[in-house]
Length: 192
Image (cartoon, rainbow, N blue to C red):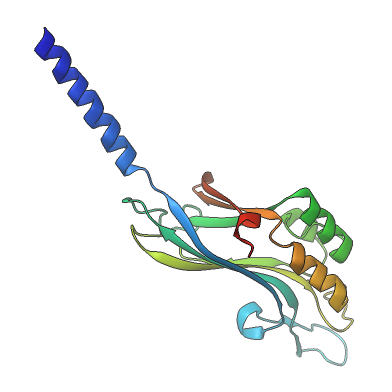
């Protein structure tokens, strides 16, 4: 009987160890944020009417860049858009308030972009292999530098943009796979 209890205990310990070793984990190696106006990073917005029809406007954006490492022993994500790795900024109350003051709405809420002529986006690797690093970017358009009916929001003043950038790490970086949260990082903890 005693041998039987040891055998069951050994199996239980091995089961727990194998379960722990298969858990994935992510490490946020680097995070930066800046205000950018760069067609290569953001693309452009085409003018669709008036005397300048066909020309392009280059928007200004709040641009985050993250380097993330899969420190686990399991591949994260699937190479399909709805099943891969997705990053999202979840603003703390102060950042949400600054965003609403500077732009007029919460740039971190996709629904608030409706009819603004602006948008947001990300570049990312849908899959992260064990011990692999990858760069991810998130950007939130803040306006254009000249009036246009396609994009009615003009870029805020330099001071307002600096205020937004200075508060941009008052947030959490949330990472999901298949709509399930797999990691959360407090960006305030990364500030130097």
